[in-house]
Structures are given as structure tokens and as C-alpha cells.
Image 1 (cartoon, one colour):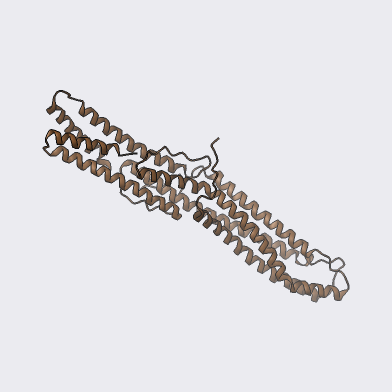
Image 2: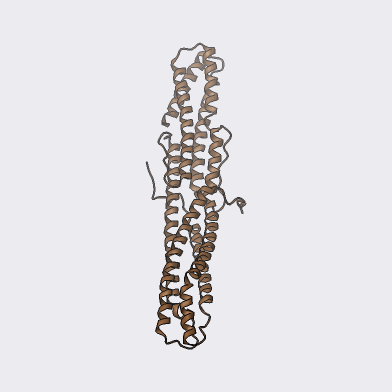
Length: 185
Length: 179
């Protein structure tokens, strides 16, 4: 079985797709972190006023309440960033899931014997090589079918007024059919 | 310009699973860093309260500034690094699966309809590989039938009527070779 480096040929042209995904992901994480920093900055930036005792107790008080402050800030951060990342993943992967879904429908159509249209993916869809390979496979089968049908038609009409010669020609054509289909295994 | 797909959530299992993986990375990174910030900031605030020399206009931020910035930088770098790695592995896995499907289709065009696809990567690609095997098996069965029928028609000494009838049946089978 021949093969290339994993996915290099199959996903060719995916450089822009990958770069866009990573750029958007970086942007989401960066924005989320800036928001988290701003929240924590706002919480911690109120001045500690009062005398020594007041500042002492304010710091002790803050240390005691630090857990809920940090936990809540990070919970909001996680929810926001996770939500945005999930939307990004779903959006980005529809360029992979969509073509696969389309190929599955085409395969179902093929098995049920319905005419199979040429598969064309949408702009930006990943795995265009898959559609191309499937179209080539169906085209080769159609080419063989066409060749066989033509040979049979030719053999039938070769000797219209001479049944023994016509039969011999048809038998020769049957040999041709066997030879033509011998590459399939 | 080609039309855009309206439905974005096409395969919730596949797309959702990947989204969950990325969410898990962010959740894990966030939880670890939150705990570290909490531990160090609490210690810093406690130490500052014990030290006692409070400057005018002191804010808690000035006490925990270095801890916050350092850990948030680590958070961004860690999450991005882990996400990039996850994305790279995911794309590699999808690419390998699709490449295998492409290779099998090319081989099928050359006549190999029996080697199982066994596509690596996500389950959805493997599942399409099995569907593809179904197509190839169906095609091979039909080709076997055509070959066998052509062989027996050629070798049997059939009367003209019977020969003609089976010839027509063979033509019908040939017509079904590719829909």
C-alpha cells in the first residue's frame, strides 16, 4: 500500500485554515486573559487606607477572602474562554464534518443504485483530495462500463445476416470482457 | 463565490468532542494557575501584613502585581502551547485518515477492491472507510458475477435463444457497474 506523509497531500491547502484557527484561538485566550487581569486589577487596586491596624486587618481580611475572589474570577474566565473556543471549534470543524457528511450521502446513493453526481466540495472545505479521488474512481468504473457496453454493441451488430459469425464475434467479445475486468480483485 | 453552508453543527459528536478537548485544556490550565495564584498571593498578603512598614497609598495590587503578571503570562503561554499541540495532533490524525481514504480510492481505481480501508483518525473517518469498503465489495461482487457469466456463456454450448437471453442479462449487469 502506497502512502504519503500523514495527511500532507490530503489536507493540502490547509495552511491558511490552520493559521486562521490558531490565530483566532490565540485571540480568544489573550482577550480572556486581559479581561481576567482587568478584573483582578480592579479588585486589588483599591487603596489600603487608615492607620497601621486598619491596613493590617484589611490585608488579613483580603487574604482570608482571596479564595472566593480568585475562584470566581477564574470560573468566569474559564466559562468565557471555553465557550468562545467551543464555538470556534464547532465552526472550524464544520469544514471537515461537512465534506464527510456529503461523502456519506454520496456513498449511500451509490449503494442504493441511484445516479451519483460529481462530488464538489464548498470553498474552504477540507479534504478536497477525497472528492477528487472518489470522482476518479467512479469515472474509471464508468469508463469500463462504457467500454464493455460498446464492445457488446459492436459484437451484436458485426454480422447481421450471419448468425454463426455473429455468435463467434459475441463469444470473442465475452473473452474481451473477462480480460478487461481481470485487473479487479 | 460558492454558497456557504448554513448548518454549522453537522456532526455534534465529532465537533462536540473536539470542543470538549480544548475546553478541558483551558479548564485544567485555569484551575492549576488559579490555585497557584491563590497560594502565592495569600502568602504575599500575609507576609505584607506581618512586615508592617506600610507605605502611603499602598494597594493590594502592588503586593501581588509580580505574582499576577507572572502567572497570567504562564497561563496564556501554557494554554496556547497545549492547544496548539492538541490542534496539531488533531489535524495530523484527520489528515492521516483522509489520506488513507484517498489512497484506497486510488487503488480501487487501479483494481484493488478488496484491501480493507481501516482508516486511522477520528471514528467518523473510520466509519466512512467502512462505508467505502461496502461500495467496493458491492462493485467487486458485481464484477465477479459479470466475469463468471461471461466465462460460462463463452464455454457453454447454449442454443441460440438461451444464449441471446443470457447475453441480454449480462448487458443489464454491465449497465449496473457504476450508477
